[in-house]
Image (tube, rainbow, N blue to C red; front, side, top):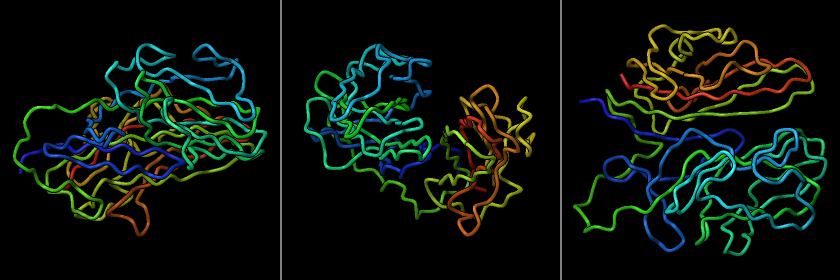
Length: 306
């Protein structure tokens, strides 16, 4: 079977959002008007950061109690440029070191606030982040409702949705790939992962990264490795991982991990390994962090079924 690529996106600190693979392998989701949209993956960009010392956008003050904060998404805003025809975004929402306990809701700016929250900060609980998908208003904006303030927040966009072609329907394609299917031999799946956190005490952390479908042969720690690079923090570099962060590749039977930031802030002993009894469905990323240190890990990865 010839090589092809199925793309998936997963992020730390939140449940994966279900999307479906349409004919030809493209991502689709249903917008509020029931029109089908296609997903466009981008290098993550920061839409806003309310912290004065790292300000992105035009606001450097916390969200207040009961406030609804509206932010334009389409066009050039903050560090992002999103096309005018975008219908929704995938995002990562972070609340750094909250001093209050409550919730934040995220929704299209011309819709009512939903019952579900996007993130639930806890006073003294340390930095918290969550990822998801949200639709845009008719004018291309989102709204955040904050229950309890003051609280700071920042939001990164990891991709956006645009309307699919409205041409005549073609023949029905094959059923989309599910997490319980087996990845065909020779196919490559790719994705990315990002985590930022502050550690008050020296710590180590493991994060599970799911494959979009099952590997035909269980992964082992020996075949989940970082590409050879200049980052001294990575301890399991593999010279057979010859792709790049922008175009990740992997030899048959291996997971190759590619960092896309300069260095690993505050991290030591960064490596990849097999995820215990989930060896054909996920792998782990592991790292150590010194006390009172900001930790940041951003990578892309690829796996090719043997």
